[in-house]
Length: 80
Image (cartoon, rainbow, N blue to C red; front, top):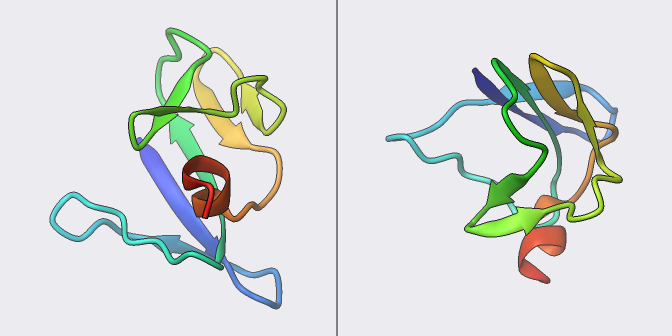
């Protein structure tokens, strides 16, 4: 199961729910994500691009993947 969290200015996490299967994220907001399930490889794709090619931002276990800290994902993945 994939979960996405928006982190507000008070450092409080609020889960972001998909709308019609799409997660709506905003350019300057900070987010964390978590995946719970069988991890078969240590490569994560966002928008068809490899996210965190050096795996500096992600924590992998046998049954989960999560971000180490909040980030502005659009700036990282899309270069905005």
